[in-house]
Image (spheres, rainbow, N blue to C red):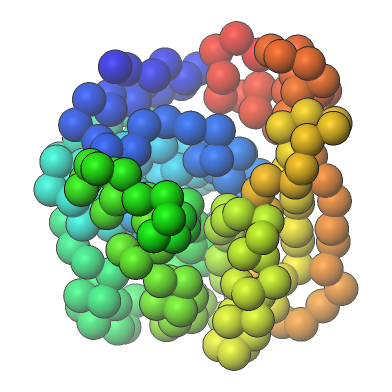
Length: 236
């Protein structure tokens, strides 16, 4: 049940949501603010995003929050087993509770791979539902919380379904957050766009938009995908 990256290992037997392409894409893609000191990973699950940011940056404070007790305990274990345990800390809390506790705190980078499926996709597994479905963390609550905790020059990065992109951006604008980088992801050259990687700041500016294709054919990865993820995946 373990997933081995080049510089760390993820144990995931106690987590409803296992390592997937979405999290790795987001962790590798997210823009990094200059002179980064603090990171917040909202809904950490296994802790993979926090660990990727620990590898990519010199941030001294990398906080994660996870509401599910077993996932929280596994996240802590993964942090402690890494080379960056002194920089990583996981809170067992809901997002609203965390925001209230941290009202005087702010972060340079806030990152989240949020739950986004709707009722029609619900599974029979309650834990998986809580981990992945939109009613566990509505976009409005996520964006509101990020706006409360993001510092003046901070970056807020997420990965969501492409079909939700316009809605997410409109909600973010209500909180005065503006996209400055958008990458739309598709599995193969002929498949539909599946995911949108979005990065926001407080400043309204020209948005850089591009597209990423993961595979040319099955297990034949594009050079762009290899370039993005090669510092993490063992076999790239």
